[in-house]
Length: 129
Image 1 (cartoon, helix red, strand yellow):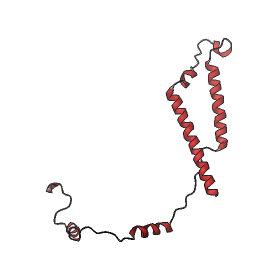
Image 2 (cartoon, rainbow, N blue to C red):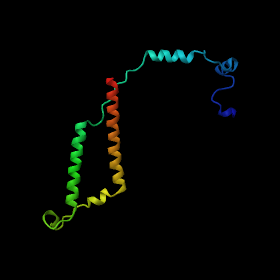
Image 3 (cartoon, one colour):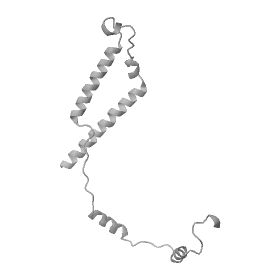
């Protein structure tokens, strides 16, 4: 190392002390002592409830199915009713749901929420034992 880039001078008393003492090893039972002291103060783990309860899953599923059904019904052209109004442009919802990005995003959300529900159920069942 260059002398100009050193952070500690060569004649620093602490550096000289470490140089004189050399490498030291801890006691043989150091790990056992530390782990036994840590075991005395073990933290109590309380399980967190899932983000969505079962009732919320049912409500969101029903709401999603209703919205999805309405979107498909309103996006298909019809010859009577709202589909024949001039100047009214209805979005093509089927094209949105055929997009791989939209499908991946929706599948990821459902998967992560289901995983949260599953793991939350495991934690609650294991704490009851």
